[in-house]
Length: 229
Ligand SMILES: Nc1ncnc2c1ncn2[C@@H]1O[C@H](COP(=O)(O)OP(=O)(O)OP(=O)(O)O)[C@@H](O)[C@H]1O
Ligand SMILES: [Mg+2]
Image 1 (tube, rainbow, N blue to C red):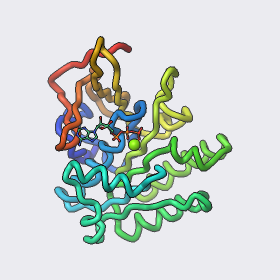
Image 2: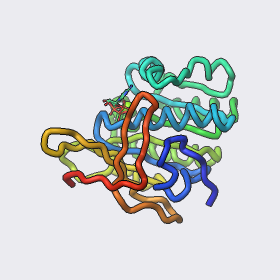
Image 3: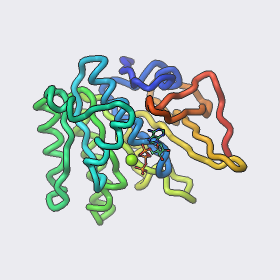
Image 4: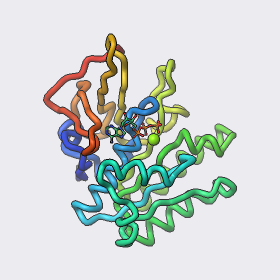
């Protein structure tokens, strides 16, 4: 299986050598675990270090704030956009049914090899009918496969539930699943990451600690995390 470097220190080691090339991965976890940071690092550093091109589709209300917030990590997405190798898609909430056509044309235009869709939960705010939404998630996975992109889709773990995703289908359409945890241990919170599955490949079966610092996310493949689960 061909792999793509995530550009997140320690991450490729626990994935079994990197993120599977031209496949769809899901990153999931509760709110504030670092899903957007993970995706931005994968996108920014992937484009910069490996001369790739990428498209970031955000359904978050304040999509410009993603660019602002990630400046803290030293990532300049505006500068990347000017090179023509990156495009940030602002969706139109009144024409949500067209969003995947727009995604497809953006991917084709810049010949994107990395794609992020952040997040399926936020997409759900605009598509009320759950059956329709599940079909959209499936259609999205088909578009990304057809275009041969290495893609990361974000969903969320709903606190108090046992599911891995918001709508319960995301983990099935994805070839790989990465879960981020942020759990209380006595008086402090700990961060832990787990590779839940990688279709057709071995991977770490342990929970590993990760940190978010001004350099972005770092995973510690040699260490084991202990959280209440
Ligand atoms: N510059 C920074 N240095 C250290 N930690 C940071 C920095 N910026 C953000 N963080 C940490 O990252 C967390 C948020 O990360 P992020 O927005 O990627 O999470 P998310 O999982 O996408 O959240 P949401 O579910 O709200 O979309 C913050 O709560 C904070 O703990
Ligand atoms: Mg986010």
